[in-house]
Length: 137
View 1: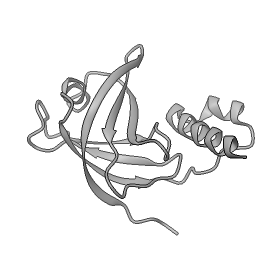
View 2: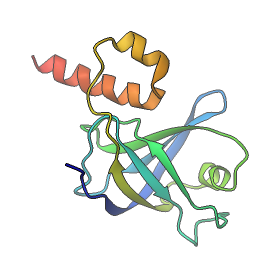
View 3: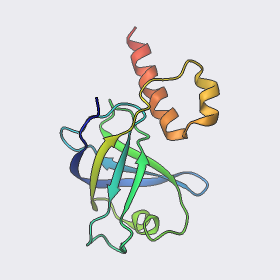
C-alpha cells in the first residue's frame, strides 16, 4: 500500500563537509514526519530563498535514521543553481519537504555486498536503524 506524501515546512539547522566535494545538510524534523529507512524526500527552496533561481526542487535520500531528532541529506557539490544557494544558506533558512517516498525498506541479506551497489545514504540509514534494533535484542 502506497503512503500519501505529506508537505512539511522545515528549517536548515546547518551543513558540513563530510568528504571532498560532499556536504551533509541538517534540517529540523517536522512534527508528525515519519519515515522508513531507505526513503527519500523532495526538498523545495521557497521563492524568497537567498540566491535561488527557478530551479528550486530536488529529490534526496534521507541519510538520517528514523529515530534521530533531525533530518539529514548528503549530496555531491557541483556548480548548480540549486546546490550553491543551499550551501550558502544560513541556519534558520526555511524549506519545504514533500515526502517521504521510496520502497527500499529492508536491509539486504549481505550488507557488505549491498554497500557497493546501493546509494550510500540508503546504506547508512539502513545500517543505523539495524544497529539500533539489534542493540535492543
